[in-house]
Amino acid sequence: MKVTSAILASLLLASVSQLALAEEDPTVAVVNGVELKKSTLQFYALERRQSNEESSLPIERLTDDIVNMQLLKEQAFKKKLDKTPGFEARMEFINLSMLSQVAMIDYLDNNPISEDIIKKEYDDKIGQMKMTELKASHILVKEEATAKEVIAKLNKGGKFADLAKEYSTGPSGPKGGELGWFTPQRMVPEFSKAVLAMKDNEYTKQPVQTQFGWHIILRTGQREGTPPTFEEVKPSIVATLEQEHIQKYINELRKGAKVEINRGNIAK
Image 1 (cartoon, rainbow, N blue to C red):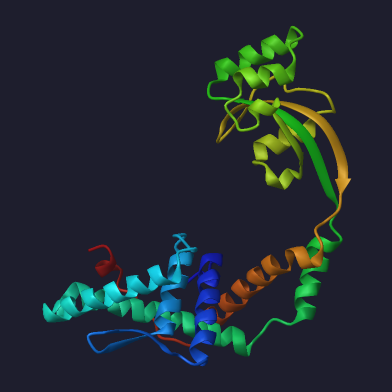
Image 2 (image 1 turned 135 degrees about the vertical axis):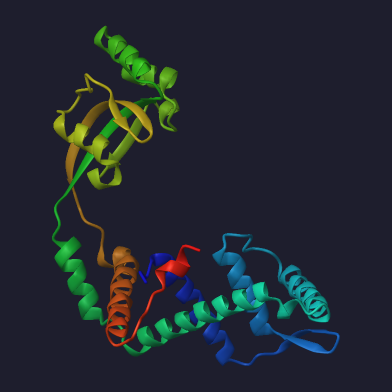
């Protein structure tokens, strides 16, 4: 099992919910004698936010939703839908997923990554890093033939910005193709390699192909940048370290476990 940043994000939401459950849990609605608690409402609101749905819905709307869900749940019980093989299999997975998340939260809570380790990670990989920033404009087109046509016009004295406005399909086209300052790591490798190989005020004499199409690139500057501050990148460092931390924990669990995988059944 590889722990991803998406899983860590869901762990964060789950931990927030646990904090809510630790407090008083009042009843927000009663449906046919069944009390719906505030914690249920909070879990639902977090689920909506996590799935990129509307996170700004009024609390009354969210409360109506869980009331409707309870009514539908009652109908499912009346029809014994909870006894179907498909439902039982899905509940088994939900149980597996939620308990594994709780176990990871518990591990991180009891084995936190110290501030010193986080700071050392920053110093080793970011704080002392020399950063080159480049400045460029580009014209993005779909076909190589069109790119060569643009280069021919540049060779005849055409203005790069004007041609970008006329030909470029990228979002920077209306601005004359200007991309501003960027680090090479921010761009796809083919693009960065081409910019690094040029001098200021040079444009590519051959089109550069990337996953986005064909580029004509004009390099306009280079400077030494400063790395981001510790506070700016701390959340991403913590997320990466926690991911590695949990992965090591899972690897140790696998070493001590007896695991048999029936690969023949997987393919069925």
